[in-house]
Length: 145
Image 1 (cartoon, helix red, strand yellow):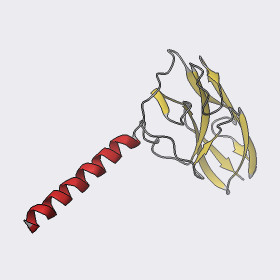
Image 2 (cartoon, one colour; image 1 turned 30 degrees about the horizontal axis):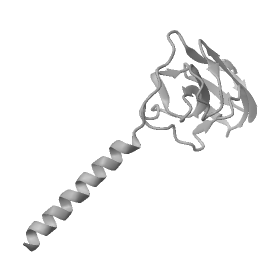
Image 3 (spheres, rainbow, N blue to C red; image 1 turned 180 degrees about the vertical axis):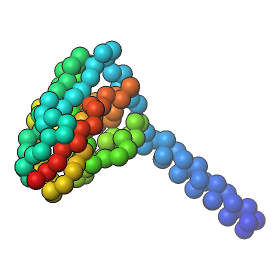
């Protein structure tokens, strides 16, 4: 009986863990056909000061603050020195490499250490979840003096 109870408890833990993992995934919002996101400036290959401005662009949809339910809207996330895009079915993380612009901002000032850095934009829906298909800019490289 003790072995049965231990196995039953273990099975319950496994089931709970898998249900929590599935619950953490959120539905993705369809991207409008032809929508795209891009970095307006700086240009790819640019040499920039330690603190510099990054301007964001979007076509084929509008910007809206995070949480806004308006159809065909989203907001920017700036990916700095990110090699692999965030999970498509989860909110984009918020950290030094994944910067959220949930107020629908179209530019920011960035301060980076000297050297080469990559920048890329990813547009997300009201819940910070990437669109389907994912809307990302081309990755650019800048050299910080």
